Amino acid sequence: MKYFLLALAALTFVYPFIWMLSASLSAESGLGDLTLLPEQFTWNNYVTVFTKIPLGRAFLNSAFVAIITTGLVLITGAMVGYALARYEFVGRDWIFYAIIFTMTLPFQITLIPNYITMVRLGWIDTYLALIVPFSLSSLAVLLFRQAFQSLPQALIDAARIDGAGELRIIFQILVPNVLPTVLTITILTFMGLWNEALWPLIVIRDESTMTMPQLVTLFSVGGRAEGQLGVKIAAAVLLAVPVVILYLFFQKHFIRSMASSGLKD
Amino acid sequence: MANVTLTHIAKAYGNGPTVIRDVTIDVRDQEFVVLVGPSGCGKSTLLRMIAGLEDITSGDLLLDGKRINDLPPKDRDIAMVFQNYALYPHMTVFENMAFGLKLRNMAKADIRERVTQAARILEIENLLDRKPKDMSGGQRQRVAIGRAIVREPKVFLFDEPLSNLDAKLRGQTRIELQKLHRQLRATMIYVTHDQVEAMTLGDRIVVLRGGDVMQFDTPLTLYNRPANRFVAGFIGTPPMNFLPGQVRQVDGVRCFITAGVAMNIPITDVAQQTALTPYVGKLVTLGIRAEHLTVVSVNEQAVPLPVRIDALENMGNEALAYVTMGESRLVARLSPTDVLALAVGQSATLFLSTAHAHFFDDETELVIR
Image 1: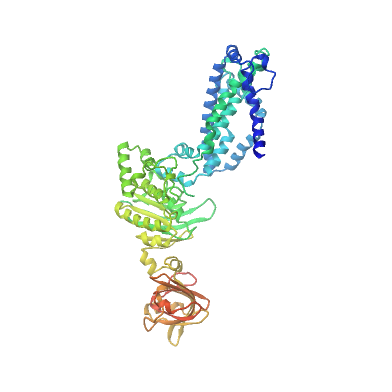
Image 2: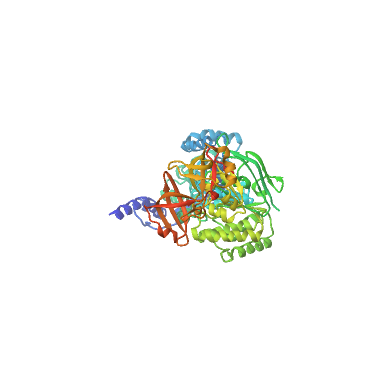
C-alpha cells in the first residue's frame, strides 16, 4: 500500500514530463490525447524550432552565462562564507542577517532598481547584465558558511602553519572538503540561471544575446510558433534537457559525503 | 640552534578574562619542555601563541633572541602537531606531508627525498598513497608528526597529540616521541593534561594553573620538591595526601597537630623545625606521598596513624590502600604482601615519617622550606 501511494505520487510528478516528450514527437493532429507514446511519430517539430529561431546560439549564450555566473557564485560564496564563518569582526552577525534577509525578498521587488542600474551602467544587451547581478548568491554564502563552520579549526591552523594564505586555505583546503555543498550550490545556481526567463526579457532585446528560456518564451507566446503546440513543446523540451541531464549526472554525488574523514572529532 | 624565550607573556580576549597572566619561561636549544595543567589552565593557548595562531596581548616571544610576536605562523619556522591530527582529508599522505614544502617552492626531487626520509623514520612508507580516512588513529598521528618533521623546523609544537589514541598505543607512541626527540635533536614544546606523559617526556615541565606558572623544573624536582600545594597534588599518581592541621610547641617539641582526630606528630628534622618556626600557632597542611605511608615503622621517628581501611587495590606488583583518618582520606602505596594482612572495613595502623613530609602555608599554598 505504501509503495502504491509512492508510485502514484511519482507518476503524478513524472507524467507531465513524459507527455511533453511524447507530444513533442507527435504530429500536430495527434496532440489531443493524453498518451504516453507519440502519436504519428515525427521529428518535424524539432526541425521547425531550429529553422525558426537561433536556438543553437541561445543555447551557447545560456551555457556561457550559467557557467560563468555559477563559477562566480562559488568563488564569491566561498570567500564571503569563510569570512562569516571564521573571522571575528565588528558587525559580522549583522552583515550575515542582512544577507539572509535578501533571501526573503522576491526577485520581482528588486527588478526595477536592478534594471535602472543596468541602464545607467550601459549594460543593456550585454552579457554583463545577465552575469553580474547574479554573481553573489545569499544562498551560496549561507551554505558555505554552515559547511565551513562544521570543519575543525585545526585544519585551518595546520594550513596556516604550513604556509598557506587565506585564499589558498579557502580554495585548496576547505572547499575540497565540502564538495557536497559545492555540488548543491552548483546545481541550484545553474538550474536557477538556466531557467531564468524574466530578467533576460527585461535587459536583453538583441536576439544574438538572448538566452534559451527567453528565446523559447518569446517564441511560444510571441506568435512565431504560429499556434503550433507541438513546436512550442519541442522548444520547451530542448530547454529542459540540459538541466535534466545535469541533475541525473550529479544526483549520486549528493549521497556521497566526504565529510571530515581525515579528522577525529 | 633554537631557544624559545617567553618574557611576561599575557593574553586576554578583548575586554574579557585574562587567559594567560604573566608567563616567563626559557626553553633551551634541543630541550623537550612539557606544558601541563588541568583543562582551562591556558596551556593550549600558550602553545598557540608560540605558533602564531593567537595574538599575544603583551610580553615578548623570542626565537633565538629575535622577537617574533608579530610574525605570521608561516614565517616562524615552527611546526605543530594537533590533537585531532588535522590532516587534509582530500590529500594523500604524501601530499599532506609535501604541502608545506610545496608552498615554500622546494624542488620536487627534494620534496620527495624529505618525505621519503621522514616516512622511513616513522615507518609509514607503505602508507604514502593512502588518504587519511583509510588509516587508523595511530597511523594518522604518525603522518601528522611526519608533516612536521619534513619541514625541519627550529621548534616542534605538540598539542595533546596522544589524547585521541588508546592507552596501549599512547604508551608506545610516547616512547617513539622520546626516540624521535633524541634523533632529531630539535627543540620541542609539548602540551598535555596527562601528568604521566609530562613526567616521562619532559626534560623540564611547566605546571600551569589559571594562566599562571606554578612551577617550571625537571620532573623529579617537581615530584620531590614541589613549590606549592597545587604542584604537589597534580604531579604523581596517586596524588599526594594532604592533612590539614596546626603547628604547635608541645612540651618543648615542635609538633604538627592534625585537625579532627588531633594526632600529635613531632617534627624531628632540624631544617623543617627552623622553617616552621614562624608558623607556630598557624594553620598549615602536611603533604605526604602514598609511598611514604608504611605498615611497619621504618625508623624511630615514624608516627603511628590509626586508620580505617576503605578499599584495597592489589595490582600484583604494588597495592594501594585507601583509608580514612577522621575526616581525612589518605592513600598508601604498599607492597602486595603487606596488604594481604589488611581487610576492608577494619582498623589498621600506618606509619608516617615527617622526614618525607612537605608543609604548605594554608594562606598562600606555598611550600614551607
